Amino acid sequence: MENNGSFRVAALYRFTSLPQWKELQAPLTEFCEARGIKGTLLLAHEGINGTVAGSYEAIAELIDFLGTIKELDGLELKYSHAGEMPFHRMKVRLKREIVTMGVDTIDPIGDAGTYVEPAEWNQLVSDPDTIIIDTRNAYETAIGTFKGAIDPETTSFTEFPRWAQARHNELKGRKVAMFCTGGIRCEKATAYMRSIGIDDVYHLKGGILKYLEEVKPEESLWEGECFVFDERVSVKHGLEEGDAELCRACRHPLMPEDRESPLYQEGVSCHHCYHTRTEEDRARYAERHKQVMLAAKRGKGPHIGN
Image (cartoon, rainbow, N blue to C red; front, side, top):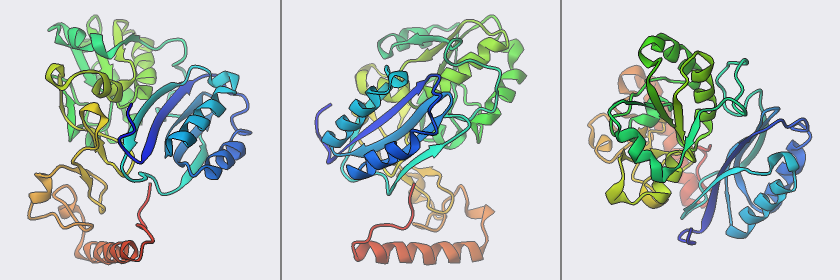
């Protein structure tokens, strides 16, 4: 990846038995803060997950540091870049799961589905016998997905098992191709599918991000942009920053055409949330947005962060 931006963004995860997960919180926090790295890392007994940004040198040092921890050897890692720092602070959090599904009986380390490299993905999903499932949430799928993909319309990944169970009969015996942003959700989603007897399950290795990095736009089956959990909001082919912005009232991503709606007011409302918020809510959001703009003019940066 060329250094096209001021900051390098690293999305990483690894499912592994990590007995010292709690002990890693303090040294990881100290390491990142000392190098100006910002973002979020999640630690649990089942491994590590997160996205961080910093200078190219700082991110390289972090990846080298993580590589000294034998359990984290073989990180799933994807790089992109950002013109401005896309995070406001550094957080290393201890969690029950590094991606929350709420099912304790599955093994994403040993039972995940078959990996499919980005270069082979088009062939798999172009097969009319393949069912394509987007495992992300509805606010993510709203701005982009693969052509022909089924959208479970979940608001949380914890809803996915119930959705899959309800469609067990239609999925059983079929070839199922699954995808998510960076690959981590599919480790659990495919393992869950196999646990309920849906065996012919595949998932996109490296997720949408790796596909957009490696597959040429003219050969792509991706439609729209890919939501990311930082201030870039979305990326497109080549992992260039996208055109989406967040509604600061409901945090739903908005494409340029969404911002043409008469219900859109920057920092205050959009067509997704206008009818579910009160005038008092909008007055509060307007005051908050005013303070954010004043802080930005003073060079203190926004108050709203990740």
